[in-house]
Image 1: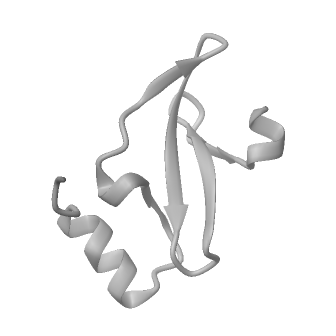
Image 2: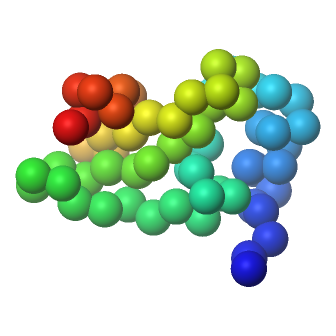
Amino acid sequence: MQANTAEYNAARLSGADRWVPACGGHEQVFMHNGTRYLYVYNFHTHTHAYLNVDTDMIESRTSFM
């Protein structure tokens, strides 16, 4: 098991209101319907979402599906 990244730990410890790569900071960009996405987490809102890497827009799970 990999240790969490420094960025992920800093966001977790401060309850930051920003999106960080999920899975301890190790989430990787993937393709979905021809668009690049990154699965992310926000510690302030306690929510997961998908970052559209091409538009820099966050999409909820509902809009992603």
